[in-house]
Image (cartoon, rainbow, N blue to C red; front, side, top):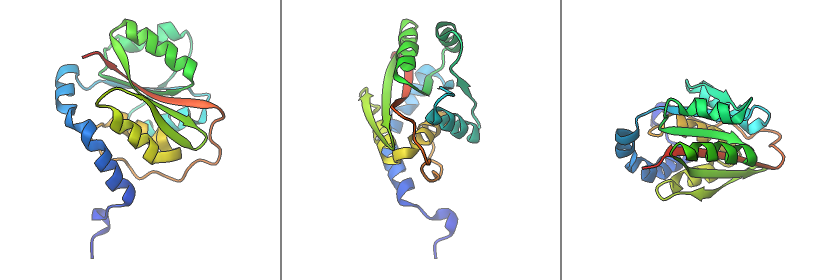
Length: 180
């Protein structure tokens, strides 16, 4: 009999397999850019609150996107994080990405969520595994994105059941990284 701690679920096996392409370049990435990570969320949307809670559950606080967005993002960029992950509406993501672009960052991956489905709509080469991760997580994509952002090398934690009511309209999960 296999001990419970060693049993693998279909979800953990899939997450591990999907993470391999992304992890293959992680050592070189970390060597160049460091390990600083920042989580950002729109507290007005359910997916943003779930993303923040998932990050907190794994030991990393997420900052609510509030106030003057330009000042807010410039303050985030002062520490030159290696990875900025967030969940917001499209307009906020676009504004924050533009500000980050002025400071040498680019949008590496964008997950588009409508209702209970998630798809990777924009992923640079080498970031496609993150889109597959979002799709495989389904309605639990904010939790999967937070788990990845907190520890890109780690295995996804067990994801709970899907929320009762997803956000209305388009919600995005996104990753900003420094240009190589």
